[in-house]
Length: 614
Image 1 (cartoon, one colour):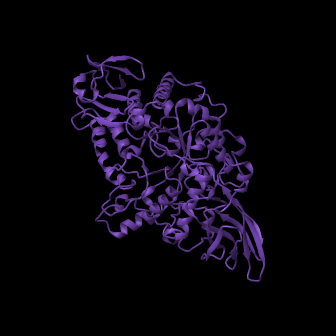
Image 2: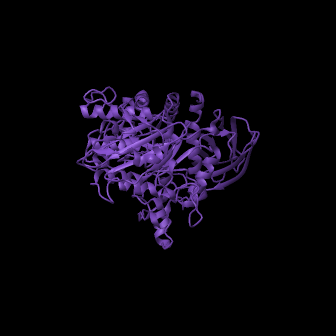
Image 3: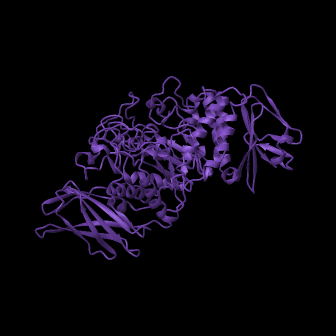
């Protein structure tokens, strides 16, 4: 972990007097010696820097090019850093036409030991999704910040509620006890928008943690403290768009920095146009270059300087905060070439790193197009290792809320899993119960605890990497409203004087306590289940409302039985002899009950059982 002195040196603002010019900032604010890619591009921003020349006499560093922006206040400096360059303070010399020379000390840090060999997340993990503004308020002093436009207002579902990074730090041990091994937080960078700033997806500074959440240093500290507990940190990266109050919008580096000449033109959201062999160019262009909303300007990734800025920004956060993964927001809305360049550059630095893309389609043919190593009809390979499995999520909801018939109910799960041949690596898909953009799983399941438990058993025993939304463990729900502010309600116990407290159990109903105990046992068992981590997946076609699948590794064999029928079913084990093999007994994992496989067994209506075969 970086020292406090180094972290302070890595702050995002640099100020220096250079003749008639004032340099306000340089992005990235620092870099590291020994990166796999030896190129570094600096964005220098300040008053009238267009006639400034840049040089350095730092050993191993060479300025190879400077490029003026369309605005006279931007200068882009391209450097090459030798493989053997030493960490230290690189002096950048800025000379004015009249001969005035000033220098800025630019930090080159030493990389953390084995930084390039870091491992991402995998099927061994359970990811916990947190909206930091709604999780816990650990620092009341940052509830209102004078430089930020929006203050705390807990009465407003769309307003800021005061949750912060300290609140997450304060409850890391709770997450360990629950069985969590990775944290994905919605964006923590500055969103100084006048309204709806809490969600984080309208960045106004991509190198600064929003001060209402904390600071860059506190984010790095969170990562370090989580790592000490065996928990990785996943960063939510938004390369497609920024916020309308981003400092760029007051003075664009280039005229084409923002799509559609900086004027709002809405996207058509026709994600299929990317792959559609019949699509006209107009539809493709509008999908990629259209904006989501007027307050989210769409970055033109065809501008090479903008593209490089975004890619370096992602690498900076990985290295600075020792991250375990990136989640890429709205993946298909980005320029395809940019995505390919981005993943290639990140994985060159961190070959075993995880990048999960959000392609919100229920069509596995559309989702699978984006996974690394897919042999697509157009030859495109995005390089993205992981994707969110929205098709399987929808199949899980449908299967548990439909009455069983020949083609409904659990057959939906079976059929969707049969589409795994479309994916190069289905085990790297991220399976979600729900997330911050949809109704909570308990609401989607009609607030039925039996359906909920079946969904959780499936989530944490099927192939892939499971992700849990904060509060799911106590059945948080939104039965009467689909408003995102309600879906992202405050976690009970995260604020002083909360009458219900998830962390202590105070005020929880018996049903909530039971759900939390159920999930805690399931997730902690999963930590030591090699068949779930890397075992092969086999399943039998559903029959009479019963669906059985197996996870098989050299160390362990697991059988999962789901009964979605209205009646108890007697399981005749000879039907499953191909995979049961010579096992005679099993143990029901969550209850510890022995099962005599030679005699068959019963499974109650609307339930699921996990059997470890012996």
